[in-house]
Amino acid sequence: MHWTRRTFNRNTLTALAGAAMNLVPQSIGAQSAGERPTARTDDIKILNPRNRIPISLIIDDSTCLVNMAHYAIPQFAVVFPDHYKQPWRTLPREIPDSFVRKFGEWCHEHGLKGKYSMVPYPACVGWLDRELPGWSLAELHESLDLVRTLMTPDWDIHPEMVSHTRVIDTRTGRPYGEYSDLYMENWRWTDNKSVDELADYLSYALRILQNIGLPCEGITTPGGFGNNVLPELAQATLESCRDVFRAEIPHYFRHLYTDDTSVAPRVEYATGLESDDPRCVVSIIGCTGDWFGNWDGLATGSADLFISEDLREGRLPEVIARGEPAILVCHWPGIYCNGDESGFKILQTVVHRLQARYEDLVWMKLSEIARYWAARELTSAAIKDNHIQLRAPFAAPDFTLRCAGTSARPQIVHRGEALPLREIRHPRELQSGCWLRHEDEIILCFDLQKGESEILFGV
Ligand SMILES: [Zn+2]
Image: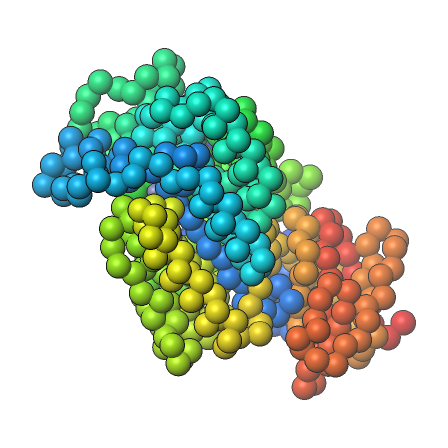
């Protein structure tokens, strides 16, 4: 079903007329938030997972072997000759798998999680589900295996559309013949496109990754893709990820802010919260610029912009102090930096500084953040006779809430099964299945199940 003004009104009226829980449509900028439960009380506050600050790393412009900067710059220069004068011939054509392995293993050892793009037809060099001219078939297959085994456990995989350069005619698989910004993914092709047209394009990209066994629950927009059709982009993401991958909670990365704008994820186009087919899409928002080595791997980055050496200044302490997810943004060529790996070294410095200052961060994949925020925003919570009734359209691990003025010894009851929670003393020990006294309130952490649950006290 496509989102239209008519379905909007119909759902709203149905909800207001008969449902036990009113569903109130709201909007977030150009995109619509969709439904929200009103059965929420100030006596219950849903906190971050395990009452920690989520942190994540977004890696754009990665794929197998192909250095996107080397191949994309001359294609960008055809359209904007004055803006793309980088010496692309001097950049290596490959970012080798030995670097993927080194990076992936270091990140795994240090607990990092996030998103790793896999551009399916990188700069029109070749198709990841067919062959990559310039490399042997065996090299492509080994490269894909490395991503499947090393990266997918800790990183969401996104297509960054089809080529990240030229727009492909999805009927023929060929790039359009017009050389202008109207036929580049990064610029104006998406202008005035409908939800259906965008969903067709997104699905085309997703299917290539599906062909090679890479799971996707979200998409990353290349350059300015979708900028002038934000409502359509959100809905097309929802439809294409559900259609191709049966993703329960699709998400996308389009926005980043480095000012005072909130960088909390936005749960959009929520519908059917009380049905057995709840839907929403989550916009994941970056909080930094690429201060590693930029998209072309030619910039000199700075760890201090993320967090200063004395651990006090920088963008990350600012966002972490707000309690919002700190989602860093980088580009793969700017991590490799044409072999000197200076972007990677900056990342290592940032991670060491964060570890030195904070004990309450939790690295999460974007899909995990999306799921948590969908549950956080869309679960109804009401107090009734000394117990809490929850109705969750989506399950979420490590669901954490704080409630006021309630006696202790909580247990969660779901479908007749009771799960007593264990009392802990120190906030750092908080994990699923535990509770904690905190001033005159208590904090509970448990795996929220889809559907109805109750929290009983003192039984
Ligand atoms: Zn990109």
